[in-house]
Amino acid sequence: MDHRRLGASGFKVPALSFGTATFGGKGELFQAWGETQVDEAKRLVDVCLDAGVNMFDSADVYSAGAAEEVLGQAIKGRPRDSLIISTKATFRVGEAANAVGSSRHHLIDAVEKALRRLGTDYIDLFQLHGFDAETPVEETLATLDQLVREGKIRYTGVSNFSGWHLMKSQAAAERYGYPRYVANQTYYSLIGRDYEQELMPLGLDQGLGAVVWSPLGWGRLTGKVRRGQPLPNTSRLHKTGDMGPPLENEYVYKVVDALDAVAEETGRTVPQIALNWLLQRPTVSSVIVGARNEEQLRQNLGAIGWNLTPEQVKRLDEASAKPAPYPYWHQAATFAERNPSPV
Image (cartoon, rainbow, N blue to C red; front, side, top):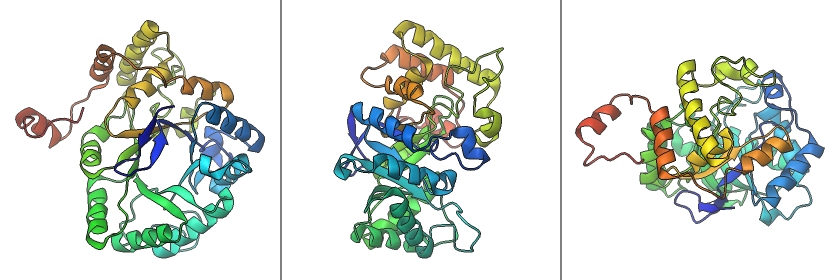
């Protein structure tokens, strides 16, 4: 397994990591993702570790904390220093007024509860699940600094931030000497390339490693979604498709056609091609893969250990390209000499 630096930190993470949103299965949304319980979770962890995938990502909102609990049981008894545990908080987790956000009150409470559910003394990577515009970034950063100093978290990151959210936070961290964010858990895929416009250049400039979520485009790049075919019976798109980015069907089919062609050339599967494409993109530190079962997991693990050719990458780039929004199309058209694209 290839290990890469997490942004500008000295910490290394595996190129593929395992997402635990399928653990627990509490609530309609997460039941649609998966209902993996402890025994199967232990087996999936074994498969991951055998392949060198030792980073496991979760969040307090995944199945109302049950995903962290299942992960904690699945890793129980394993050498803690051989594992990388990543989790997130910020989204609402209860009815109380303070059960949401990135305030000192909520973050300390969230970390303490996550530690108990995970059965560990520390979290390797703790990320804000979203931006809280109602809490001063200085309060949030000071709280994370405190938790780092206490040894409860080791590295910090964000998820679902815009560029200005990130830069405001990085500037405040620089000003006050707080730990800077080194990870950006971001949506990025062959059919979701918005990340490249602003967040990727920001990541290069500010030392933020991308930890990619939903690399198969909300289930659209599994190889089961094709022109003229109904959704498969087990697709989570039946219940959660409206949560993903809106996409025209013809655009998805065009990208899948290109993936099919490359898959035929390489003898790889469509998901493996889509994942390998991501692994060659700038700033990407780790790509989170999920799986309902061992078969899916082993297939996703087959995305590592080889590379698409430059010509194949180019064809996938062209098939998935979309017009950039302003000001990015203007920058590319008139000032690319001094403002080059990161890809």
